[in-house]
Image (cartoon, rainbow, N blue to C red):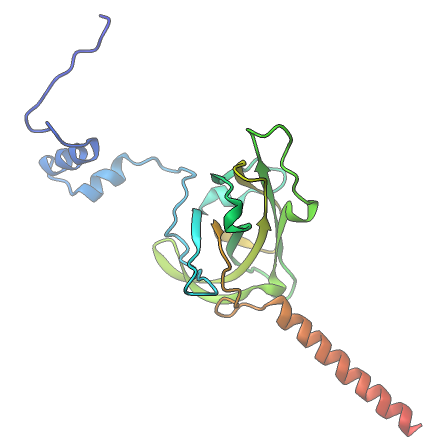
Length: 245
């Protein structure tokens, strides 16, 4: 037989495969949701854009952001470290220089098992320009993203089906390329210490985003100000002590 026979049933004519599955489930006396859960794979490294809802707004409401890609990963696939192979596909695009740099924004949600000690996670950023004659010229400082508990804040977030307490970190890099360069972006999880990741969300977009801290998050500026204040107090005490002598 050179070609499979095609059977046409009036009950399913003119509807999509998804609709057919739902109709089969209804005929079998099962709800569509139960049927889908029954046939779903037990685990798949599929991104879910609604698994970690985190705010992202333009600094200027009159100039909205242009989102290119929005991916979120949860589950065993984000437990990988440097010794493991991990490949999280963020997205691809053709660069439009007229819109300015492309921003890669990472939101990292994790629990902090031992708050008495610092936690950190390193993420490699893989950027390829497969259609260009030369490799993408990316500064080495933009090739990794570091997540550090010093700049994370505790918050209740929706990671998966129910809200839970987690520590949230947000980091970003800006990239430029020659006009019309086709670019592919992916992430690889490297060494991690004292952090148990629950969700990682990556977004690519054009535009100037609001860089205010997330709820409960510490910023580098805030940390610098605290250090400067502490040094100022120590200096004032030193001057006072020297004048006394």
